[in-house]
Image (cartoon, rainbow, N blue to C red; front, side):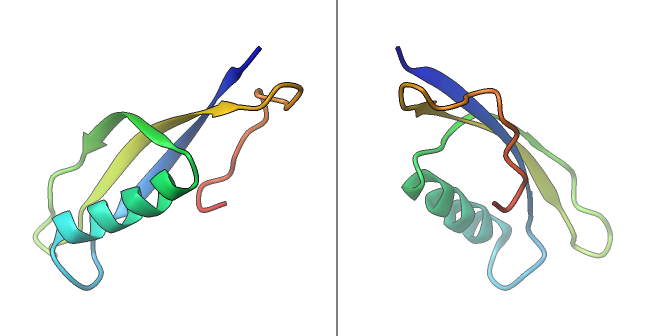
Length: 75
């Protein structure tokens, strides 16, 4: 029986390119690892142009894999 593994990722959009490009790039990286977005919370930009997005991700795990383990952000 398959289980679902969850992960919370904070994605900062203060680098090069538009915030949308940065967010999509990171989500595509996570998607290539099998993660799907379950929900997102976007923080408003500060006067310095910094913003971050909290993303709840999920993916199916194989049988026998410990689905309760925590996955550190950026792992």
